[in-house]
Length: 124
Image (cartoon, rainbow, N blue to C red; front, side, top):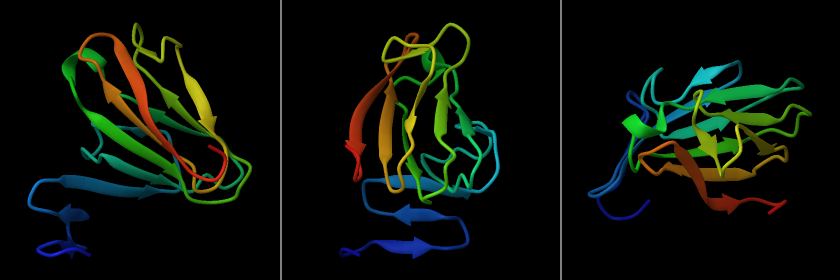
């Protein structure tokens, strides 16, 4: 950790002078991102089953970003699902997180779109 950063296990927040991310680790779904608890970092153990992360409306969340990471080697894929009328990279859904330790960062354009602005992991 860097100077002035602390980990608060009680709230699951990384306290940094400039950044504050709610962190949630999940083993069952679906999960309603931005609705269930406001987490921006979503760590998912899919096991052998598919897992859906339901995104909030893009138009109500301009600039909102989510980091979604698959943390296990199970066969289940992580599917990001936008609200009806919204898209991710102009598609109605995106199911590309299949490998352990792969992560996508997506951000809302404030209209009807979510955009992938970062990919990390062994398969990217």
